[in-house]
Image (cartoon, rainbow, N blue to C red; front, side, top):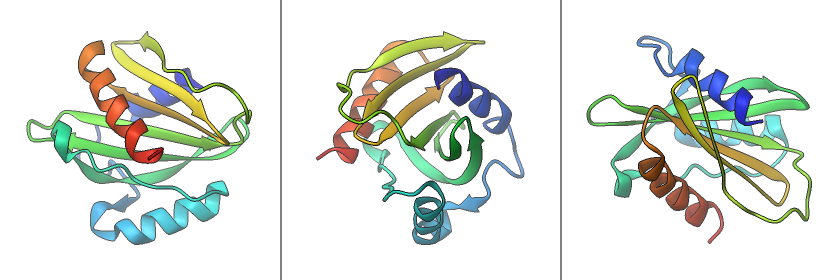
Length: 140
């Protein structure tokens, strides 16, 4: 799961003209479309408190079906991606796990039916701060 999130980040984060399929200006449409496609109600976290804004999102293939990817960017152009899949094993304990691959840091966790992975080319402590904000907003 973490590996696929990192690969998706590596493929799409550098894109200048087409980093997402649906831009942030169509956020309501993006959420409705991706929620329907992955079979669950998605929310997009607001990351302004940690310096990031939504760029948009896209639909990706996953091991077990469709996956959603949301992209965020800070004022310097640094990008993070949130990879969300449905069909995670319910009842599993929520715990952040960390991995690093090809220079990309990723925190990932399972919560209920969903698996989440936040990836970026930033240090572990900064990414953990963002991951905590994401988790708190998706699980109030």
